[in-house]
Image (cartoon, rainbow, N blue to C red; front, side, top):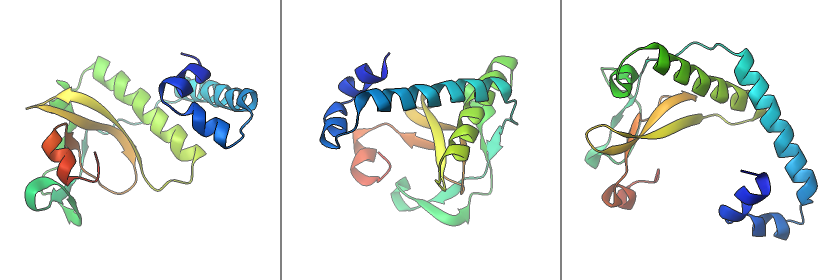
Length: 150
């Protein structure tokens, strides 16, 4: 998909136009970053984090209690169906993307989530940098009502 098509489909073309951003320059910058990302990911072989600490959940399970970590780490291998070469290569690519973003940004936290069927549909954190954070987010209307992460 082209950058211009993405901007149209995401409803962001009006933002580009309202900010008087030169579309050709913007597309060129995004294309250059995409190429840098491709090269970075191909060159990287980052460590894969199969387990990570997660905060305890607050009352009702909507918010994480930062600074209070759960006794058991989250086991990503169990969620993905095992520690196998396919999952390893996938997580290595996700971690490479996270590493690239960390290198390019001034963010304190960034993560990649994917929709998965666990006990129900959830977003599962595959790779991240920053403070410990929740591993799964339910994809339900009820959770969206009580969470600031939806």
